[in-house]
Amino acid sequence: MSSDKIAQWYESLVDDYKPIEIKPLDITSFKASGNTVGENVRLDAMITGGTGQYSVTFSYILNGIETVLSNDYLLTYDLFMPTEEGTYDFIVSVKDSNGYVV
Image (cartoon, rainbow, N blue to C red; front, side, top):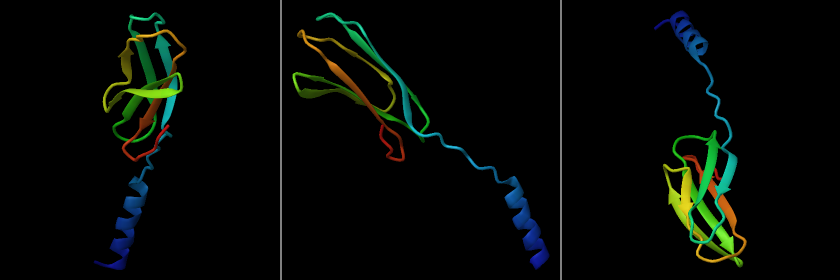
């Protein structure tokens, strides 16, 4: 192949190249609805950016002890039924397929 043809081929590759923008992984909202012992609390997370599948973990802290509710690759919500009164600090963490965590 001549150097002119190689240069033309390379230019066509460069002209066709369009960068892909990958937005940073982010949890744009997190909501817990419900607040009565013995009734379900729905936890919802809105996730944007990142790459590939997400691994979503919901947990809570009560009396200084963290309890993991779920760790799932597909769901961005969970249901939780409190069994005792108290102040629950809910936590959601997300990891994308590149290993980035928020």
